[in-house]
Length: 454
Image 1 (cartoon, rainbow, N blue to C red):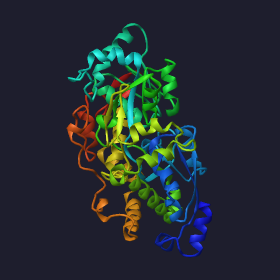
Image 2: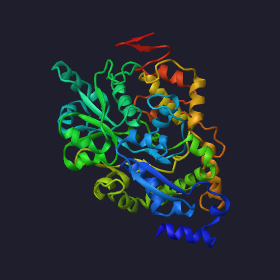
Image 3: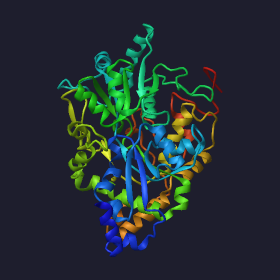
Image 4: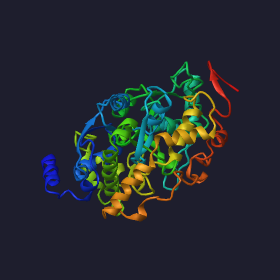
């Protein structure tokens, strides 16, 4: 019915100014996603008819894992996808699969958490301060986990935790949290891509929907993942989320919408039209103080999207987050889709991911600051974003004041008080930032065998 409606609108000139202004080079598109709540802009753009308004006939397809999703975009089976922010960057610099992937749209801020099993939580609790009501004081530092890891190591037990992909935000956030608490999360080298060189905590890949079951089985003691898989552990009674990424780094960038650079070059108007629809979806998700979130949760709970229970998704999507069972707290910015310029693809966001790749050895050699800037600009495309935003404003569908028209592509430095280790981040000075971090590669250092040299 949606397709029929769009065709009729186009033929009777009722589809609005977007169709009149943009001559689409390709109108039938297939986009991929992973079953996480932060795929919401894609689902909303489809369900609210924003793709239809642009004359786009879109199919959304869930993917088995992040590698399958990336390969689908590279080989053309998918025209674009909900991606880990590190994926376009890693592909473009040739870490793993090599391909030039770009992003004209950042999908969200925040949205992740770190969960540990009930057993590990009980062992951590004596190391955590509590308030007058007996509740744990947040944010919880990994320093509370350190004695637990040391005990397991002394007993000859490897301490295993899960993350979703080597270039995922979750890998870097889990590493950041561990390192901020004095634990070594391990290094990569060109010869050893396990990421476990010199590690106190052994991190390995587990697909998001499998995280709770893998922890329940005892294969891992905890994990970092997006929703709803932290709240699922609470509902199942098998684990406790100890920190959200909002507490780790306030309003940190999360997923992006990734497309092949060749697609954007071959279909520039289509790329702008897609970006317009996604911006409108993000606006809808955040408008009127998240007034549409309950409807969004109903959409996401359907099996073709995330497929988790309504109550599990709503636990974080509607402005709260539950830690220990019954300890539900107000976290209105746990998921941010539009406010704070969440959808603008900032170069400084890209550079943070590149610094973490360098920090842990995925980028094995030192790079000058200019390299970080050039790489970010080859992947993140704010010009496409702003072109789409301008059309929305001209059509009366968005407000002029909601977009950073005069930005140079860099956010103001993130202040120290917004990051768990108290270390500020300035995207214009990546090497100085790396040097300021107590754990991780810096300067000319590199991993050789099992040692850091330089």
